[in-house]
Amino acid sequence: MDNRADIRDFLATRRARLTPEQVGLSAGGGRRRVAGLRREEVAVLAGVSAEWYTRLEKGHIDGVSDDVLHAVARALRLDEEERVYLLDLARAARPKSPARRRRAVEVPASVQWLLDSMTMSAAFVSNGRLDMVAANALGRALYSGMLTGPTAGATGNANLARYAFLDSGARDFYSDWSAAADTTVALLRAEAGRYPHDLALRELVGELSTISPEFRTRWAEHNVRLHHGGVKRFQHGAVGALELTYHPLDLATSLGAAHTLTAYIAEPGSTSEDKLKLLASWSATAASAGVPSDLTT
Image (cartoon, rainbow, N blue to C red; front, side):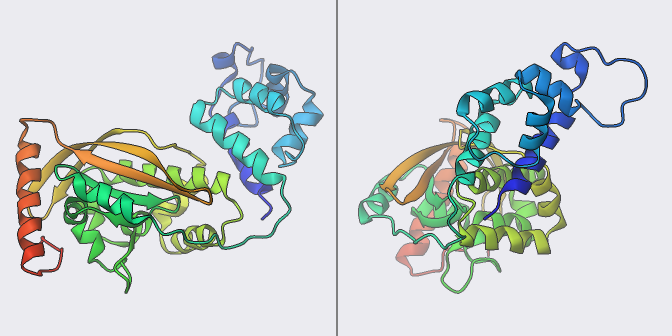
C-alpha cells in the first residue's frame, strides 16, 4: 500500500493548525494564502531545506532518518502520540509488500480464564481493528446492545467502530457519543499507521467511510490516539447511567498479533458500583437460565 497520501495529509493538517506566533516566527506583512504555517517556515524550524521539506510533505518519507523526523515533529509541535504515528508512517513506507490480510490469532484459553476471574470489572479483549474477540460476563452485559445488535454479525462477534458509527443505539449508549467516536477513529488511524498493509483494516475503513459521513469527516482529520485510560459514561438500557474508569493494557498473546485488554471499573462506594453489581447479578442469573446476553429487553 502506498501511504504517501496519509503522510501528506497528516503533515499538512498538523502544519495548518499552527500560527507563526505560536512557534516564535513573525507573521510578516500582507495576507497569508494558507492556513497555519508555510512549508518554508516548517523547514526553518526543523533545520532542513524548503525543497527537502516540500518533498517530505508530498509523502517521500522512505529513507528519512528518525533524527530528521524528530526534528520535524518538534517543528510541528507534535504530541507523543502524533510523533509515534509519524515514525510508524515512515517505517510502513519502507517495505514494498502488497496489501495482505493479517492472520487472525485466537486468544489463548488462559486469557479467557483471566477475564472470567475479573468478576467486578467489565473486561474484554480487542484487536487493533477494534474487534471484540473475548469478554467476561460483565463485559458482555455492558456491551449487550452491541453484541446482539445489527452490526454484530452472524457469529456474534462485534466491532466497536462499526457499532459506534453504524448502530443508532450507540448514540444512546455512549453519553458523549461524539467523544467516543473521536477516540474510536483516532485508535483506528494509529493502527493504520502501524499496519497500512492490513487488508481487513483497509476494508473496514473503506466500509465506514462509504456509509458514515461522521466517520469520513473524522478520518480526514488525521487525529491519532494510543491506548490509555480515562473515564467513560454510559446509558445502559438495564441499569441506567454508569460512570466507569477504564484501563487498557497491551496483551502479549502472539508475536504476530496486537491485542488489548480493557477493564471498566466503578469507584468504590459510588452509585455506579451499585449498578455494576446489579448488572453482574442479572448477567449471572441470565447465564444460569440460558437467557441470551441482551439484558436491555
